[in-house]
Amino acid sequence: MSTHDEVGLLSLQSLCDRCHRESERFFAQKEHDPRFCYELFRRAFVHSNELAWHCLYERYHKLVLSWVMRHALYPGLGEEADYFMNRAFEKVWQGIPAENFAKFPDLKSLLRYLQMCTHAVMVDFARWKEQAHLWDRTAETEDGVAEYDPFAALASNSLPPERELARREMQELLWQKLQALSQSAKEDAAIFGYFVLNLKPREIHDLYPGQFEDVRDVSRTKDNFLARVRRNDEFRQFVDDA
Amino acid sequence: MAQMEDSLKAALYRITCPDSATLGNYHLGLLGETAVQPIANHLAVCPLCTREIEQLEVFLLETAVSLQPSTGERIRVWIAKRLPSGGQTRQGLGPAVGTPAFALRGSSSGPLMYEAGDAQLSLEVQDDPEQPGRKVILGLVLGIATEAVEAKLLQGDGVVTAVTLDEIGNFTFTGLETGTYELTLSGADVEIHVQDLLI
Image (tube, rainbow over all chains, first blue to last red; front, side):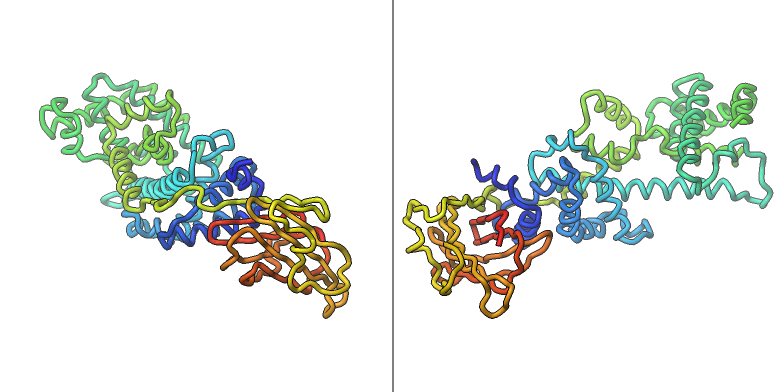
């Protein structure tokens, strides 16, 4: 029996203990042996062993916390580092089903995945904040008098999960309907840049070189498109049904 | 018109963008073949997702987990195998040689003999003379360097007690309740496990 096989036979407590000591050596930049922590990951993901998972959390939560605080987005997100650290562990847990564990041949690849998940939860949060800001803007009008807004039904920041899913489906349907009303590649580019990417006309012009005559052509294309959308009976019916 | 425009922006913001974990999996090469091309197509037209990938790349570099220096299997892990009672090991650690230095008179049974890789291990379980109803383990390890080797007794998910071996490989645990334990002997580059140790 090879020594690698024997690591697989160790009790969870022994593994946890040795993983801890090898991690200490790793953080002290000393020679270390990654097999024990890797075996813990394997038991956590392949055997859904909650104690192994708990041990890994104990070993790595400070490391993840340090990653969060070093991320370029962190200062602007306005949320505690602990929040992102816990979301990162949840994302890792959800992201590696047992059948996919073989894609991670060593500890380094698993820690790299943990890093990626840390980044992902922070980017998700940044996206959510940006969209929330856009929703907030829809509630503001220059003179305080609300205009007629056919999409108001889609604007809500705090829906329960089941409504959130329905809203997402409705938004995807809305995007399909709008795309169907586009009559040219230029209109495709304008509405994608404006509504999906929330870019400024100058940025859209630069993103699609040669597509628009000038920056004003971007706004003109979008305005013409919207005017046609408002006149479209089928689209109005869709919005009324929504 | 302006409000309709704002509502469309809010409703459709990033509607075609893959979620950030999918982008991350793409970057790490973890996506299946069929999932890769749509992401690549999207990145070609989406400066926001492209920027997020660039941020990820920088983040991975800045927080790079270097597992160097590592020689991989630095530690020899041995699961101890029980030898027949009174059996001779290859270095001759039998009852006569292997009786721990601190062996007490009136031992209830002979020592338990184990072999683990290059090491031989003798364990003698006795009644604790100072704590009625409790047990003592007298241990002796031969065949490995015993400097800075820690003997640890585990039960359930916790460490019951731990001691350091003396210079000739002796160790003693006292005041133990009867039960099943795991004994580990941990040195800088060796780890010996005696599992299901019933005392």
